[in-house]
Length: 179
Image 1 (cartoon, helix red, strand yellow):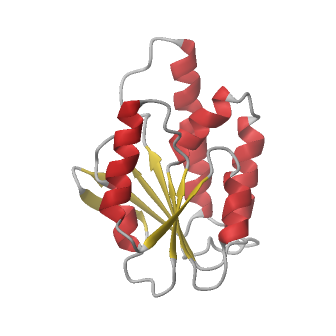
Image 2 (tube, one colour):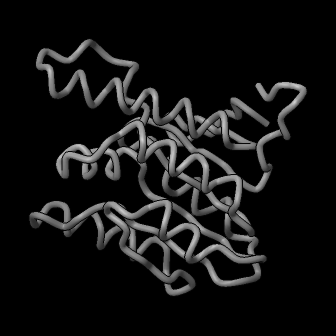
């Protein structure tokens, strides 16, 4: 919650959380259906195998022709700032894939998270960010998976604090956590 000396988070920033195949991406896209201007899909996934290529193709087909796609597997804050303008509609899908890319590249996760959160307050137009909620299950048995889960939890908390709205999607049903 914002303190008295801080401005409230911008209402134009929405975080959509959920588990795998929960319907979070489709919900995030629907949040931008009413935007009159161009809609931009900022993809963080990298197609490293046939299965991921198929997932990316399915997402692209569902979105339809009204979307332009920019790939940003690492430079997310920079891409958001470069593409943001009044009336813009930006969708980032997804933060946890971005996080795994950062970890694989040996980046400073705390610094990258801070850079992303700082840029959110400067964005114009509307921005929707999608992220997996990975901390609801059992404790992973290996250190790398536990580290990823911990980073994802901290990333989601930081973005949720910076967002004006947070929605959790389960079984295709959106639940507003932060109006």
